[in-house]
Amino acid sequence: MTHSHGDDALKKGSISLGGAIGMGTGVMIGAGIFALTGQIAQLAGPYFALSFVLGAIVTSFSAYSYIKMSNAWPSSGGIAMILQKAYGPGAIAAAAALLMALSMVISESLVARTFATYVLRPFDIAGGPLVPILAVGVILFAYLVNISGNRSVGLFSIIMAVIKIGGIALFGIVALWSGGFGFPQANSMSEGFDATSFVASVALSILAFKGFTTITNSGGEITDPHRNVGRTIMISIAICVVVYLLVALAVGSNLTIDQIVAAKDYSLAEAASPALGQFGFYFTVVLAAAATASGVLASVFAVSRMLAMLTDMKMIPHSHFGMSGTIRSHTLIYTVVLASTLAVFFDLSRIASLGAFFYLIMDMLVHWGVFRHLRHEIGASGVILLSALVFDAIVLAAFVTMKLGSDPMIVLYAAVAITAVFIYERIYLSRWTAPQTQAEHEREL
Image (tube, rainbow, N blue to C red):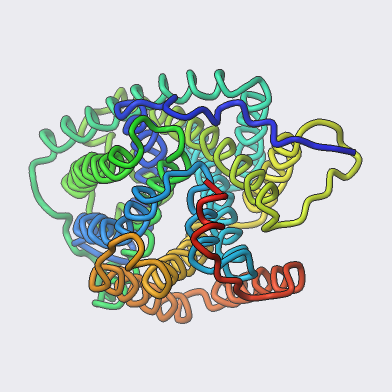
């Protein structure tokens, strides 16, 4: 049976600079701030707002590799293209690309559970079977929208991006005005705060910005990509850090660290009550539901598309399991099944931790590959590439140290999963690396 990629969205120049910025910020803003604020505050203590700033700085260094590569070879292959050019069509490139895809699936399940947590908050339900049931429900909703066509996804995403960015900014301004400018008080839950925990919190902050990779994955479709991909990434990160810092300060001005941590899965809704009253609480719940639902939708679209690309690039095997249709329709189902499984069996903290481990490992491999094999060819600064690599390594080491003390099993799960991915790809592709020639680079474009 012959299967096609089936992606009708891959049209050169089909995304304007403004549209690309809207796509990038739409993916980043909303889901991360709702899902991660409380968890970051638990680690960073009274300075959790600064964790977002450091996360933006580390992300900006990381983005350098992706910008330089996209400027040289704008491609809808995105991260898979970067890795394959750095390491060749071998197991290292394929495994790292698969880790990225898995981190996106993990993010999808994280946002789905956040949706469920906020929707159930007005009913004073903070756990139980309804959380995974609703999480799976919103993932299935995203699947139905995705199978209706790319235009439906694009229109829904644009509308929701405008609503959630405007709503979150409004929440931050009003709550900050009401609560007064200031950092939250350090009460009992932050007494154990230390430098290692603060640095570890940056690993989660980075997750709130990693949506910029969606722009990289659409490089071939952005107008004047050699110029606009980099501009889009940096503008999107700048907008996000302003909004994140605004919201973090607003939450910190209305709640103590104790209160933020106690309500970590729905901290924005909790902060809205003293600042805006009951109306503010329900406004935030509705906003969170809209933001997270659209985040799941965008994630399902991006992951299924990336998996289809990896299949098309022969980096992962594919089986249709008797299903008809395109490869993309199959990877859409695989994405939904895997994300639903994670949403059922893991809580928000563990899902976020897995996502951080997978993403940071992949990111480090990108920086090393570009530094080792491509920096001269694309005119990249070795100092910046190595700085990005070191920053990732420091954050990862701190995060591992912190998790070994608080939840060693999630470190074990991550280590086993990452090792399994590399072993599987090594068996499938039979080689670790296969450096490419310039002619091969050009043929892939």
